[in-house]
Image (cartoon, rainbow, N blue to C red; front, side, top):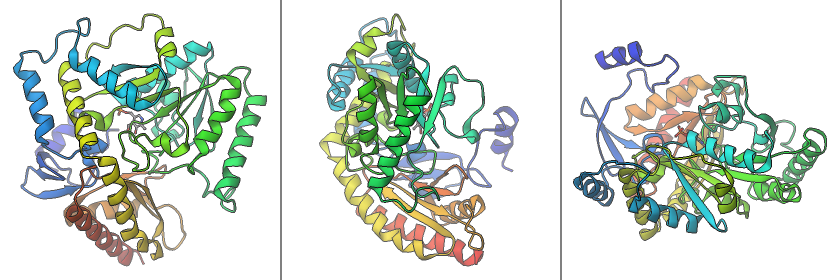
Amino acid sequence: MSELHSRHRAVLPSWMPLYYESPLEITGGKGSRVTDAEGSSYLDFFTGIVTNMLGYDVAEVREAVEAQIATGVAHTSTLYLIRHQVELAEQIAELSGIPDAKVFFTNSGTEANETALLLATHARGSDEVLALRGSYHGRSFGTVAVTGNRAWKNSSLSPLNVHYLHGTDHASPAFRHMSDREYIDACVADLRDVLATASPKVACMIAEPVQGVNGFQMPPDGLLGAYKEVLDEHGILMISDEVQTGWGRTGTGFFGIDNHGVTPDAMTFAKGLGNGFAIGGVVARGDLMDGLPALGVATFGGNPVSTAAARATLKYVLDHDLQSNALRQGTTLLDGILALRELDSVKDVRGKGLMFAIEMADPATGAPSPALAGQVLEAARERGLLVGKGGLQGNVLRMAPPLTLSDADAAEGRDILLDAVRAVDAGAA
Ligand code: PLP
């Protein structure tokens, strides 16, 4: 164990995961690549933790941040006017498509979701909430309550009454004989049943358009739109958790929910927006936002440095039409690795834009194999590629390269992935 690794273990919680048997200390980054303390260079196909959506050391972002710091005001108070904050809010309100939208900035996705849940439960006067099985929404009391898997719950106590709905389980035995249309109809019938039998009044539904931590599991396009039609009949609000899916990553919409043909009442965001600087937030219908009495300031929410970074990041995304790049590179990459489905130890290969996943299974039993996924993670690193891992069973490799991905980097990452998975599969046979 390296010296820093053992010091980490001594003072940071034991439940904080670290990747790799010898965890990396990343000390530099440029474009799609990072270098570690030992001087090794890696192509980063997980962009930190889906945080550096433009890649590393982007001049436009760095200069915007440096210019803000040079004013001497890294932070003063959110009780004063902050120009970048107002301008960023204006831009996000407009991009969201939510009528009369207002924006509240936080420092993380957890806080953003917590705020959205507060807005919705307050507006409806109810603590009944709908969430999807397999979801992940954060680490706070409310967001843990709507997180649909025990593995990521640190408490079974809940400030909310949560009903879990189907969403990304269309490959499970109960549904796999169904077409997408039939599955959507079955989900909607189930929602109607829940509303008729379980709760007198439901506040909201919260859903990820592509479930991030759950291994990039995606509901069929249109499901969230079909859900919203029913919710609208009851005045139930919809919150789209765009923490992983926002800003064009899915390629087919600027927000993940665009794949479902519907505008939600609120969206939450974080991760990529500051290209590494901590920023999150909620964009919601103005009446919902204003309806929450005196939530007050978040001390660092929307601070001058993070909002400067976010303004520059968003400008870069739009100026370079990175949504189109996500679609193009994502489609080519997925096509390039689909052949892995033939391997006995690969259960599924799927993707949407620059979010794609490889699911590993035990070749003998077909059971999800976190061990094989761990081996691929290591094998890819040995070949110079960093990827993510996830899924309810920890058996899914997750790839979320920067939206700026070039043809050459895409091809290099694809070849390493093919090689790493094939090598692990050969060893597993
Ligand atoms: N929502 C989703 C979809 C996420 O993937 C995450 C983090 O992985 C969160 C919320 C929580 O965000 P944070 O870790 O910034 O609190």
